[in-house]
Every structure is written in C-alpha cells, then in structure tokens.
Amino acid sequence: MPFAWHHGAAVSAQAFEAAASALSARLPRKPYVVNLCEDRYAFTVAFAASLMAGQTTLLPPSRAPQAVRDSCEGHDAYTLTDEEVLVGSTEKAKLFSVDPKHVAAVVFTSGSTGRPVPHAKTWGSLVAGARALATRIQAQGTIIGTVPPQHMFGLEATVMLPWQNGLAMHSGRPLLPADLAAALAEAGAPRWLMTSPLHLRACVAARQALPGLAGVLSSTMPLDVALAQEAERLWNAPVFEIYGSSEAGMIATRRTALDATWELCPGVALTEHHGEFSVQGGHILEPQRIADELRVRDERRFTLHGRKASLVKIAGKRTSIEALNAALLRVDGVQDGVFYLRDGAERLGALVVAPGVGPRALRAALRRQIDPAFLPRPLHFVAALPRSENGKLTRQGLLELVDSLDSVSS
Image (cartoon, rainbow, N blue to C red):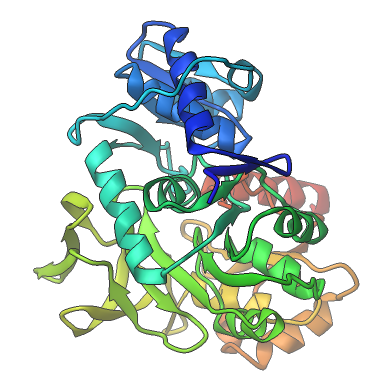
C-alpha cells in the first residue's frame, strides 16, 4: 500500500519521510507554522517536517487573509504553501519520533457564533483519535477527502487516519461530482470518501456513479437521514457520520441511514452535572462541554436534539434551527438553505438557493413538513450562501447578507 496517491502516481512511505526530512532542514527556526497547503500530501509533508523541527502547526478556519492574521496573532509564526513544500528531494528517509505531549497543532473553531477560538492538540491525542476512528469504521485502502486538511475533521479523517493506520491518502480535494469520480479512478481500491453533507448532496443530486466506493464518512454539519439512505442506495456503500467539535475532535459516530442513536468513540465517557453534559477520555484529554441538547440511552449511546443556542420558541411552539434546515433541504429543487432568527425578532427568516422554485411553492412544501408558526418571513432567494471552504456559515456573514438583501428590497 503506498503512503499517498499524488497526481495519479503512488508515493511510498520512504519517499514521504525523505521529503519531510529535507523540508525540516530548511524550515525557519520559529516555534509556529501556519500550514496553508491545499494539496493534502503537501500538507502532510509540511506537518511532518514541522514536527521534526519541534514546531506547532496553526490551522486557521480558512485561508482568508483576515482568518490567517487572526490565527497568527500573538504567535511567532511563518507560513507554508504548496509551492514551498512540493520540491524535489534526494535526501534519504529518516525515522523520527514525536513526544506524545508535544502540541502538534492548534485548531481554530469556525467562528460561526463569534471570533474563532484556538484549541491545542497534542500529538498523542491526534494519534489516539486516528486509531479510535479506524476501530469504529474499519476503513481500508485509500482515503479521499473533499474537506480541507486544516479543518479538524479533515485533519482527523484524511491525514491522521491514513498516516497512523497504514492506509493511503489521495492528495487532491475534488469538489465537483465529476472530479470526485476521477479521483476515485486514479486511487487504489478499496476507496473511502471523507466528505460533508453539502458535497454528498451535490453528488447524489447529480446521480454521480462512484464505482469502487467502499464507504463514506460525513461530518461538519448534521446529515439528513433521507440523504444518507439515498447515498447508500446509489453507491451500495455504508454512510457513517461523525459527531464532534473543534474542541473535542471526534466524540461519537453512527450509521445515519439505519440508526438515530450515536455511539461514543472508544475510551470516551459522557458525564452529566446539573443538566450539563461533557465528554472526556481516550483522545479527549480534558473535559469538553457538549453544546447540544441530548438524551442518554445508556452509558455508550445517546440521541441529539439540536444545539441549545439554536432552539427557538414561537407562539408557544418549540423546535430547533437544525430541524428546520433539514426540512428546507428536503424540498425538491432546494440546493442549499438556512433559517435564521434575529435577536429580538418574533418571526424566522430563511435564505434559500433554489433555482426554478418559487416562494409560493416553497412555502407550500414547507407547510407539509413544519408547523405554520415556523414558516419563514422574510424568505430570500439567493445565488449562494456565504459558506466557508469548510461549509460553515458564520452568524455575522449570514446577517450581513440578510442586511444587504433587506436594503435592496426596502
């Protein structure tokens, strides 16, 4: 099994280690590096080289200049890009070890509810998480990802999982359904796809054939049950989902098409104190609070009922923004969409990407799924939502778009 598939060619583990050794020797002697590599193999070479040099990798929530500046604030750091990493090397491979307590990376939250917050990840916790994930999904062969390696899910599932479990990684980040099919064709079998619900929805809508696909792992936002079931029928492969966060990493998994219940990852324990839940154990070194409403089934299993901050109550009726978003995305013709509630507002609004669907038809379809109290007013149709490359929406970006639309219509 090669270490990676890079531009259709197999790369051995020895070649990877040689490239990392050569890069490590010429890195600036600073304590921090911002790894901006888009090529997944280049990212991993740079990550390994920084570990050899005893450095810590900063992983901003996006490559946007302001996000990078915010991540570097207070750190003596330099940046690395694909062009600086992917250079030829004749150096011999060098075995290296990393102290499990070394802070290998600092992952920043998406900033969906405010300023991105840093969270330190030790090398030991990243390795333990990769091994726990391998135990849960039993992936084999080549890992292909549509998510960037700078994201916590991308780091866990497309870098650490293959690196620590003898699997191969595909260096690309295919976004369009046809690009994904091409990536599968050039990688060794069996093949696993690590993706988000947005990319999964696009591939299913396009009825894209993905021959040789052995399994799918989804994260970054809730996965609709109907979408998971349709993907399993289309590709005849299981679709798993991760529940996690930047703070904790992977917390639990489930096979969404078959079961609404989440099962904790190996070594992770769920505890409750005065109605608040937290997780710790395994690869989660410190207690991490759960921001969602959940119901415990037994000591290893639970169900989710939306983020506490996204629960809404209108006209005496209660639901969650996640449930409303799922109903919106189930409407035929809707490609993307989100509900929102302004501070102090009494009515929900929604932004929808749905070419060819009119407001009356959309509201009628929603009325069949949700209580009329939650029907959106205003309802804005837009060409695209301001999502980050991780598929996240920040509240600030969302409301700025709403303000611009309101000003045009007023």
